[in-house]
Length: 96
Image (cartoon, rainbow, N blue to C red; front, side, top):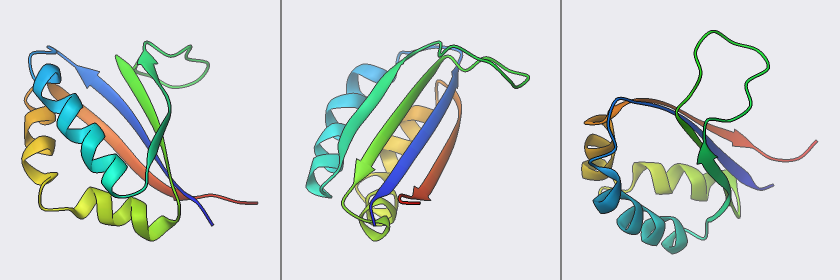
């Protein structure tokens, strides 16, 4: 069963992004993941706060998604991302 990561970003600044994206994309690939969708200001139908941006990642399985997020090489990148604002990150199993 595939594993998915959904991220909602609420950013005050994007100074961190130029360094964050290439390093994070490499780690995602190392863990067998790929980007399914990403962009800015998703069309919000419900909720209280408009995200600045979103990302949807797919991994071969739930464990791969979890291992990517827990990878020690990702920890400093998480801190870098947090320097721009806050995020909500979800790891969810695929399948019905």
